Length: 355
Image (tube, rainbow, N blue to C red; front, side):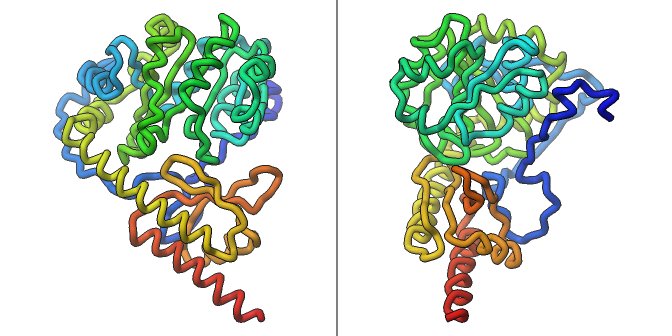
């Protein structure tokens, strides 16, 4: 195939999602999905017609939800398409770079490399502790700066004030992209209003997490109108199907939003219970304190992951900070998290039997 492929595609390592591997199990806590399935009723009789390129009713409801103007909202196929559009629109192949802070969401890197855009790989530690002037120097002339906030997989947060200061310190031709896929789980850190006070800030959002619609593939890009106008030049003619638009519209109704927020309260409470279990476990050496609908931890023994797989409990292993002992657990419902507790208890029994 190398005869047909550009060199940078031939060398590209594809993103490995939580659903990429053909795993078998009974309890799925590996993809940061919401455990509360939506009850959806569809009545669509015009699928022979092309959909609205940007469904007006959905845009209006999301703008109201995010407290921005309708002309500041772009609906996309998941937030992933927003990432792709930003890179395609603002980065020149084989010339520009994007800045990311590792460890973080892997699609920033894959999307950039697929367009022959260089990666300016900085660290989460630098993002959290460097001075603004040091950060700006490290970012240099990167065209896009991606900050997952809260960060996946560490859960770390960057304050609004720090984002504002970084935005002000960046070159005039650099865009700060704040990916808020998990923001509903810590809504007090919502940065959507930055698009009104800063001309170089973009916010990425999704219905996949708190709204429990991961299978819908529906996202939103919030940005100043000048940025969205440029992105629309490279946007597919009909990016959102009528089915997706219909479900998204219902999900953004007042009653549905209220239900989502109640579920977030429940999930945050369950998350704290999980953290308490993990911190008292002799098999866990570190638990990262962060936001989002997941907990990331470091195991003392990597073989503990094999035990969970044999039980049918599927969680997400990671290589972080030069160690393969890291594991991310999505917050499931009570029954699913009871399986995590059972797993921890089984590790105790295995440990005792070896003594």
